[in-house]
Length: 506
Image (cartoon, rainbow, N blue to C red; front, top):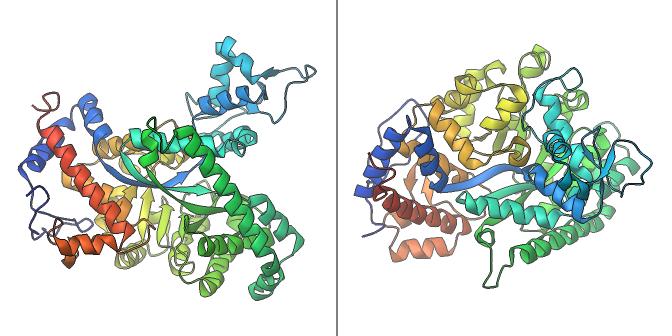
C-alpha cells in the first residue's frame, strides 16, 4: 500500500492547476508541519534542505561553480591572478606586473583571497563608482574566471552533480557550450546575406560534421573527467554519480548575426546527433546593445531552423529586463516573440511580463500552450533588484502559467536550489502541495525523452495505481516517467522521515 493512491477532484483555484492525490497520513502530517515552519526560518531551512527537488532546469555550468573552486584549480595549474582586476589569468606570473600574484599564494594572504572571491561572485557586493550595479558586477565575473573554465569542465560537472545530490535534486539540465570557438570561426568565415538562412545553411553545411564531432569530443572528455573525480562505479562513488544530467547547447547572442546563426545551426545539429543534448538556448545579457538590436532577427533564426529540425526543443532567455534598463519599447515583446515566433517550450526569467503588449493575453496564451517559466529568484534579485512580492512569480501562477524554481548561476549568486525554495516559501503563502507541484514541474517540463507520468494534473491512466503492472510497463518505455516515479518515491520517504522527526514536529 506504500504508493497506492486514489485520484481526488482538485478544487479550482486562481492559480495553476494542481496535481492532487489522496494524501497519506504522513503526507498530511508533513503538510501541517510545513505550515507551522513558515514562521520558523531555521527549521524551515532544515525541512527544505531535505525536500526532494525534481529538477534544476536553468543552470549555466560555468556560473554554477563557486569562486573558491576556480581559485583552487588555478593554484593547482600554477596560474596567476590579477588582484587589481579580480581576474584569473591564463599564464603563470612573470614577476614583472605589479598587482599580480600566483594563485597558490592566495592561501597565505586572506585579504587578497577574499577580494578575489568577491570579484568572482556576488558575495558581499557593494556598489562603487567603478562597479556600480549588481547587474554589471554579475556579468563581469564570467570574463574574470573564464580562463580556468575549459580545462576544468570535468571538475565543474563533478561539482555540479555533487552539489545537486547534497541538495536532493534529481535531474539537472545544464547549459554548456563545447566547441563554441569553431562555431564562431565558421560564422566569421561565412557572412550572412541579409536573412537568407537557406543560403547560410548551404555554406555552413560542409562544416557541420567537424563542428558536431568537436562538441561530442569535448563533452566526452568532460564526462570522463567528472566520472574520475566522482569515482563512479567504485565503492568510493560520490553521491553526485546518481544525479541525472542532460545538456542544453547554449549559444551566445552578442556576436554579429552570421556568428549567432552558425552557433544555432550547429547547436540544432548537435541535439539531433547526440542524445545527451536535449535542447538549445541563447545566452548573454538580454539588455546588451547587440542583443537588443538583433533580438527579432534571432527569433526568426529560430523559426527558420525549427522548420529544418522540428523535434529540437527550445528554452529561451526572454524578458530578463526591467523598466529603465532598456527603453519602454524594449520591454514590449521579447517573451511573446520567444513563444510565438521561436516556439520556445520554456522561458527563462520572464521578469518583464507585465510590460509586454497585451500581457493578459500573452499570459493566457502561455497557460494554454503550457509554456513553462523558469523562475530564478536569487538571480533576479542580485542582477535586476527584483525581489519579494515585486517578482512576477505569483502573477504567472495566478494566470495558470506553469513555473518551476531554478538556480541560474548558483556559484556566482552564492546559493543553491534550497535557497530558491526558501525564498518562495517565505515570500508567498504556498502550501506543501504547491511546493510539491513546483518540484514536480521541474520534471514534467524537462526535456527528458519519453511520455510524462502526469497529464493535466493527473496520473496517466496506466499509472492510476503506480505499483501496478500496467504502470511498470508504461514507465519501462519512458525515461521521463521513470524519473518522475523516482521523485514520488522520494516524496514518500521524505514525508515518512519528517512525520517522525522530533526536531520538525510542533
